[in-house]
Image (cartoon, rainbow, N blue to C red; front, side):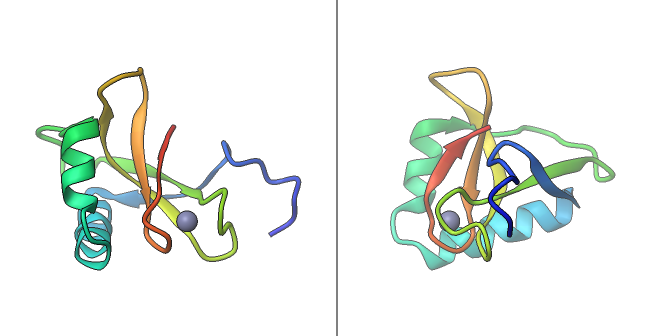
Length: 92
Ligand SMILES: [Zn+2]
């Protein structure tokens, strides 16, 4: 991916089902991720099944890592997103 694609630019969008599955996979892949998400983010709550969520390229591994929304950040206004390749979390 070229360097002029900033980390804040969305990469694509995904459905609620795709988002939920991606977070589930990430939580299974990275130890402690589920606990980190629940301590640092609040759940999205009831979401419409046709809701579309942004997906971002991970700033750490932008060629392969994708950030999926895991909840709302507790401390700051924003979305709490988790990388499916490195397990890091970012605010968006
Ligand atoms: Zn990553």
